[in-house]
Figure 1: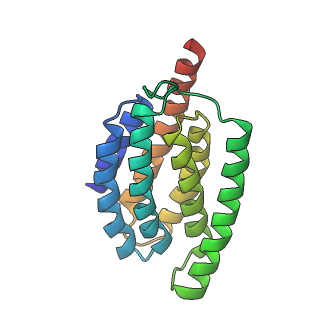
Figure 2: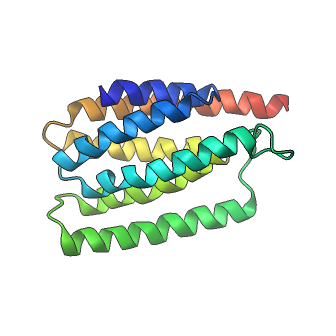
Length: 181
């Protein structure tokens, strides 16, 4: 169920519809439980951050435009790239240290890196920066490998393959929107 709702949610994001956000909240709540059961603690904790980013993004998409109107698709500005890369690297290192020190996670480096870079990509999608889809492509490929290595995570691996396809589609669609603006 979590995988299907997530696919629907990301499909809605590729089409720039606000319905992306309520379906995203539902999938986030379901995946908090799924990841916790799989002992992927960074991914479970990430879901809580997701809720905050979904609320932020929902507001941004609705009122973040130049006149407090709909936010348009845009390229990531230079300052956005600097923040994204610094946050992704620092977040990865911090979460890796926490997981190696305090958890029994069997894959702390991959789990932590997926979590940190997913936060970055989600922040970028909330700003409607087209390059978020490129970040998601790398994250999804990495996540597929992680989930294939964990027991009972096949449905999530399949989900991330679907998310990989949707991410490529999202990039294509948003690139068309950006070109027509």
